[in-house]
Amino acid sequence: MMNKKYIAIIAAVVLLVGGFCFFKFKSSSLDKLMKEANEYKSYQLVCNMEMLENDELKSYQVTSTYAKIDDKDYYKVELYDKSLNQAQVIVRNDDGVFVLTPSLNQAFQFKSEWPNNSPKPYIYQSLLSFLKDNKPEKVKDGYLANGNMTYENDERVKTQEVKFDKDLKPVYVTVSDGDGTEVIKLTATSFKSNEDIKKDAFVQETIMKESKNQYTSASASLPLYPVSLMGSTLEHEKVSQIQNTTNHILKFTGDKSFTIIESAMTSGDDIDVEVVNGKMIDLIDGVAFENENQMTYVSSGIVCSLYSNDLTKAEMIAVLSSMQASNVK
Image (tube, rainbow, N blue to C red):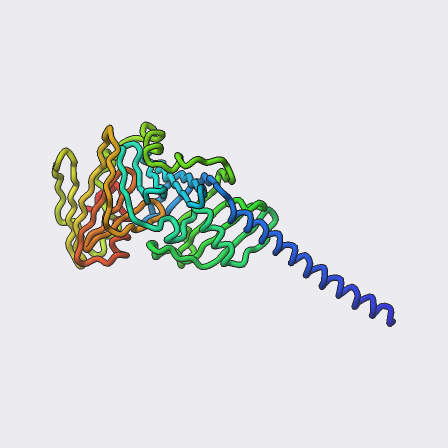
């Protein structure tokens, strides 16, 4: 009887110690992977991204490239809009942060901490930070992390789920609103690390030269109309020509009045760099910048400027993010 009791005690101790060792092994194994991943000298993540905006599904191919060169961090994100056949490239290099439209030789230069100023589903460091802050679950073929999430300029975002494979390569990212509806879905198609990426890959002139002829002009897409109207209606619409640029002017009146001026960027032989003094608003599928009572949204070769004394910053973002090719009259 005593022997059975001792055997039971020994078995329990073995199970306890074994379980502790297994947990410690799992934990140390993940810690080792995370340490290695955080020390990558470079990476390139290619993925498909879908975004839900006012019941419209936008589809992008995203290529995110990073390199640490001479203790400096360089980033390049190419957002290719599949429906418009237009690409926008955001790059951080020695000269600052630039938003490029290669097909048009157009560039905007910003003073910004991009991409470190807010989380992004296609920036690997952002995903590693999320994994660290949210207790990961070991699954059959990798790791899964779930947790609360906020994106500075998208009030819909409440939660995020990220899956990595067993080598800590991204598999997918889903971002959901408060009702559990997926508003962003990103699926990785390729991830390479510690490749030999040169500094030239982040120079705006090089990017423009390599990508200029790959995409088409977006002028045929205009005018765009906002779906989020903030209680206003379209009162007046006209087209004006200023210095060979066609401007579409939409005036909305109501509880919160505003005016939108939109135009397609025109192509030139030389790179046209516009230095932007306003604050950069970092959006997932593009950028905007704001000055007093004005916000300008740059995406896929189109510039939309919104003017209003009534709208808040969040409302301006909501209006500009809802622009699409459908008449609201």
